[in-house]
Length: 428
Image 1 (tube, rainbow, N blue to C red):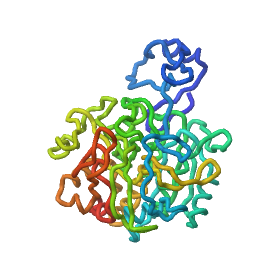
Image 2: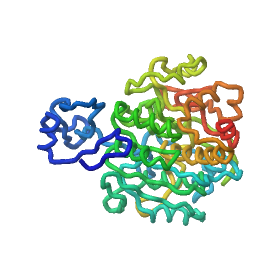
Image 3: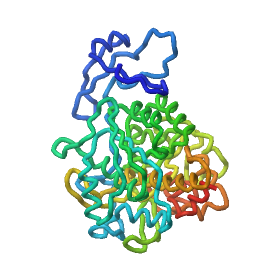
Image 4: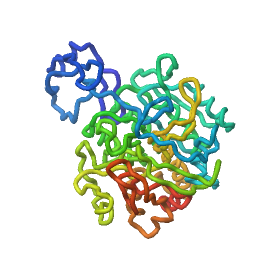
């Protein structure tokens, strides 16, 4: 036993394989993966325990599916990537995080003061890459970055042996959207349940972003997400970057009913550091009815959400809920260098986390509470008379099978945030 969290929802255990086999009444085997050039370990049967207390789920006994980062690097060959119009203020006209702040929030006084953003990561990061980014774009870095090792995971990521592109872009985007955050807390671990549970136990970050995908584990995660919602924590998960064909084990946990799923768009601004001008659905934006069989939640059963026009499912959870810029026209620093041509819904999720940090800043200043699970409020706004002033309704662009249409759709959800108007609607 290596950890006993204060909420008593999760028990982390490590030990020799023989001990685990005896404890769980299983035998481990090593097998050739059917689609990947590697082997994987797995038990020969479902684990069982002779306990006097109920056990919800046992996870972590196989590595059939490895976690996937939902970003597209410039060096990657991705058929879904498209080079969009470059109206950003980064090198070569590429977008940087401050362009997203200008486009989606504007030039008001909110900046995330007093708020902490939590980032979910399966690998560590090099703070020098974060520092290099802000140096290259000639902007100050005033937000402390704190690493939290979950069960002894390594917090660093040396370029020669590790890729920190996902971890660093998450940090860069969250800080750029809300440049006066009290801190960004980077949780690094090896098991999804343990990482999310530590974020819930700490309860210091009221906005949480995850840009990773893995195999379905809804049974284990739902109690943790419910606790986060009750504590006023908002959780954003990137949907993925291969459009409607994105596999379910990459999409997850974006299709969990207790999180806000974030898809991707192709943004055009009025110029470098300028205001929002137009937006289309990004062809890489993962959106579809749940491929993991997650039932449709109540907020999507409301009249006017699922229509013949958007082709959503009336029985399965539909994603995304919202969206933001994700096209491969973004500049970032990672693995010891910097480049443009990067993208993915990984950029969109921390954008939303930073944006909601400003909403929570406003809510608390007005005597309110942090917003917590956003979907009920988002869908109420989407179905209300103020929708067009609170969201950018994106009505063009396709992710393969689905097309962006008026109101909710399976490419961009309800769309991207429309300045301070959405913050006001969420905090009134």
